[in-house]
Image (cartoon, rainbow, N blue to C red; front, top):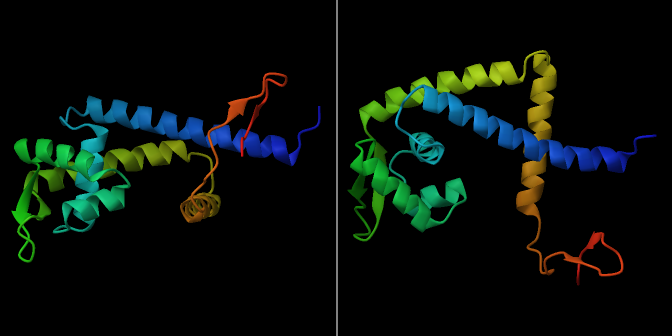
Length: 169
């Protein structure tokens, strides 16, 4: 049977989904093994905070692409555990700016080493120039998805006479 471009595109969609799942699962396993007391979500909040300390909670939520209330819950737990702190914003008394505690910085360095090892294992056998091209291509795909206009179509439905899923609208 001959493979078509359409087959490759379908395979790529599934492959990207599988890779995301497998990488998250392996990273979670390694973080658990390191016994750091952080969930992946908490680690992501710390990592993103480290890229720009002093940002507002709502700015952190935007950078992570998750709801502000979800970020607030993670930050509450991280503050209570001594990983980070909230400081009042000088211009807006209702807002908080986020900062890491020193112990969070050392744990982030440990996690960076852990993820670097995973990345090296994941990319084993792929030459550096192909790795760079792959990352560039995946970043383009991500930008394309973010640039997509909002969809107004309804969810897919199943046609009773044809079990294949088709878009309505």
